Length: 174
Image (cartoon, rainbow, N blue to C red; front, side):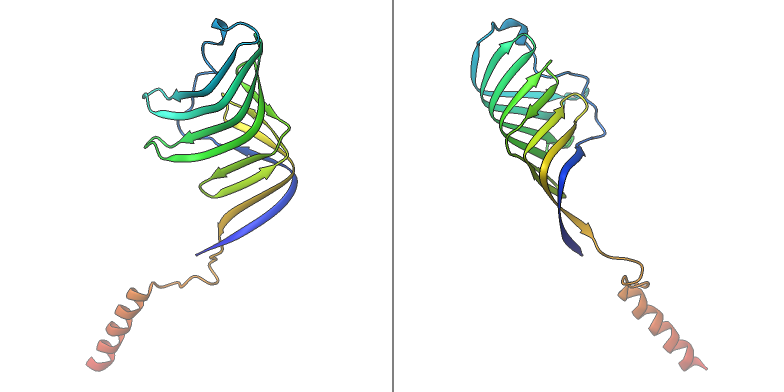
């Protein structure tokens, strides 16, 4: 049994940690581009040590501002479980990537994960640590388990029936 909880906050700190850490930092091969280079329809995958897909950086357009800064439009970051199922995604209208690691956006941001949905007015996200800060006003919705020891049956129904039958048999034997 679950319950949908909605909260509104000025900022939301989140991390999309997994058991498999990436050693790679940011986007590869930018040293081969010159300032002002424009790349369109970009998809950059990252893999873990066992060569399993761990994340994907997608953008409709990348512009190399200088050797340390890249501007991106219509960005989507996807994070995967080791079995290749989608774990989480972050959508950004525009973003700026600093030092191939720090992603910043001051435009609306949307985050979707298995048990969390959040929207905010901006984002700072560290690619190599899979941690970020969502600026607000921000709204986060999460599914939580509302069962407690007070409202959860202490004996599962099938076992309760079996115990009743044993008690009836014992009483009948007397």
